[in-house]
Length: 93
Image (cartoon, rainbow, N blue to C red; front, top):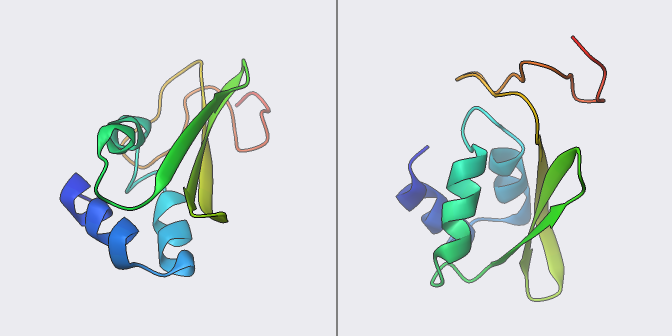
């Protein structure tokens, strides 16, 4: 998914649509989320929380949490959104 499509989704998408897209690491990778943090006209706030082993991203509009996603800090993600070292629960592969 292109960044321009993500901006349109953040502007006018429902909470369910935004959550579904953000939770899909194949569509939205960490670099896209970091770039969206610098874009100001999508109407959402994206906060980052580095927790050591992983980094969480929280997307809010006003006081409502629209979506959240995390990325492991070590290892890499492939084009399908699969991580090279850990599964979703932090267990080694």
